[in-house]
Image (cartoon, rainbow, N blue to C red; front, side, top):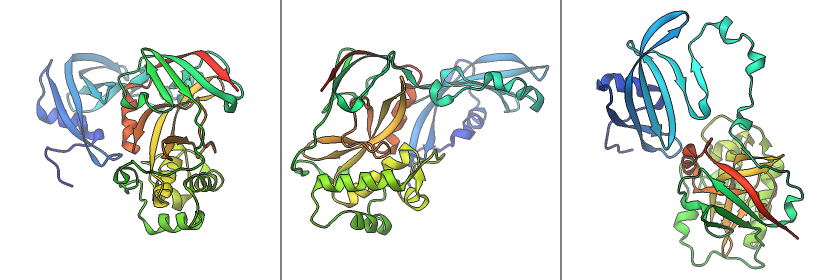
Length: 337
């Protein structure tokens, strides 16, 4: 992999800052390695000043360093010896150096569900999701995102309208450049023999695009165990391990669809569940037009509570870093069948 500038890892960025001898008030840009896209991405680091903290009953002089990575803000307090003793990240979550007894003291009172913490309040309960044909949201706190508008979604000012899709009776991918949506990628290995073999087993040779999508979606829904996986989503590993969360379902679906000749991309955004919107990933396939598919939820097309914020490969979800914790939604109109 050719690199044009020095490359750093996220975990070592403050060591890089120390070595660069950054001055108070100065901002430097470093390029860190992003495993999701197998590329370098810039991170800005600003040395905002010195600050004395009380850590384990001792006063310690620290450098306050603020970072900006893809819109996500983070602050670290680093000793003159290079040790990080306190950090504050998105949503105001703070980590502070402590001993074991203090760290677990009253822990039950402070335990929080991080998934719920980053979710968005819907403001009301929704019922019969499959019968909603159109919904309108008032949105705020979103940066300009190219994937917000288009196809089933229309954004006008702060109103986001999403219409339920219908499957086309006949479908093909004419008019679409297949190189963009059928080609393999490092984590969507649609040309790997194991992926190709499974796609061949799942999809009849004379099956139409609709039938191909249904068969792949149904297989994923029943055969892949739904459980969290802490890793970079990888289609081949998901196939071998037969488990994963929404990200693993999405990369494996994309690989199988592409191996079957159906153009597919990964979408990510928000989806409704029990009065809140949670961050989620699913797919879109091109059948004369883009149609949403959620293999984890077993939906084709996906319901209108799937709010698309990004589209592309697994790396496109980095665009959500500046969104989490900042977006708010209000449902202003619903139309049922």
